[in-house]
Length: 271
Image (cartoon, rainbow, N blue to C red; front, top):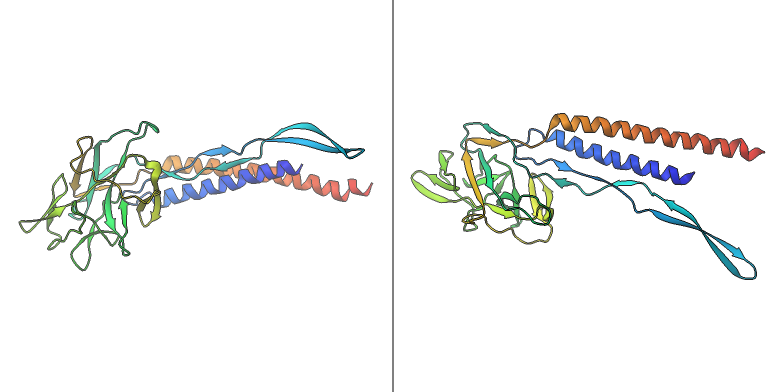
């Protein structure tokens, strides 16, 4: 009886984690460049049960009972790096990264992904899909306070917000070239992990290569446009409802087990 109790409990835990994932996606539906998380359910490996009985003198016998499925779990979350919709804002500090042509990973059959490289406060390089830029106190182009790096690996400094960005990322301010915004590419998106604050890092700790000048890559930067998140809110709410119902169904299974064990302990046990 307890085996079924554990199976239902694992299902409840997996649906709770699924609900948390969907809630986070919905909460970031209006976040520029946010990529929704996805997770898949997997069954734990089956266990082969056997019964071992003692035999005299000093021997044992082993008899197979059968297999047991130990429940379900939710695999690690994986961002979906599809392009979000573009929205015109006419703000010079909104710069959308439009992916036109990307190489396809032969193992996963997924497109590569492009990012803005930024430098964090501790000097590490992280990667962002956000199209919302701003100027810091040093008039450097930043994303969430982190300076955006140019193709020469340095922050880009402008005179004021009256700057222009060409499609290849060249930044011009008051008639001078301030630098070219670098674009980095990850061919295997499984190597990326969220770092919070709309930033990603690589699981292997290596810096991503630049996509600028790569003949296999085609992209363009659109000033005055913002890339919206790729969250499908309607689908997310539908999945959340399904997760709640599955959670409640397994909760009722546990309640039924609890009543059965109560009866076994307090009624049958008296006989």
